[in-house]
Amino acid sequence: MLKKRTLTLLLLSLLLIAAPGPDAFGSNDAGVIDLLVASWNGRTDDARALLAQGVDVNTTDDEGTTALMAAALNGHPDTVGFLLSRGAQPNVNNEIGESALMMAVMNGHVAIVTTLLEHGANPNARSDDGNTPLMMAAWHGQEAIVRVLLDHQADADVRNPDGETALMVASQGGHPGIVRLLLDSGTNINAKNLSGQTALMLAAAEEHIDIVRLLLDH
Image (cartoon, rainbow, N blue to C red):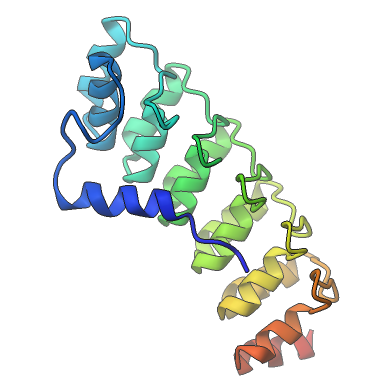
């Protein structure tokens, strides 16, 4: 089964409790902290001023978090666009293998996902546990994002270490709209995971009757 990205979700929950201060991101460099906090809060003018002072747009905290990741995770499309225009790298991963694209995907930020893809983010990149942005979107029920990823050449037949495809993930998770999109993209309906289960078997095991019917009718 697709593993949830616990560290990102923990960071999200903690930072939603209160606006981040100097200790929210781990670093001894005040400029790094200021840029990450400004980006997290969508303060594009502050980020612009920090870059003008010489802070590296791709600098990271101790966990590998970049300003682009902070802005993407917290849903600030203007800040994301600005950082990209100043050379922010979209395909950098943090310590647990997450990119800005993956963070935007898991939190449902469609506009940011689109912007990142248009600026070269890899739709088929893998996290440390071997999952792609498409698998993450399928698991979290992000139908609009699945559509965007497919439009940007996301490979629906890539498998994670458990042998699962995005179709299997969506079928097990109970997301019929996503299952339909993946089927329309031509994904292999008969693919099996390492346990020998197909998308149909996974949907049936979870009693997702609407998805079972959809798969049988395809």
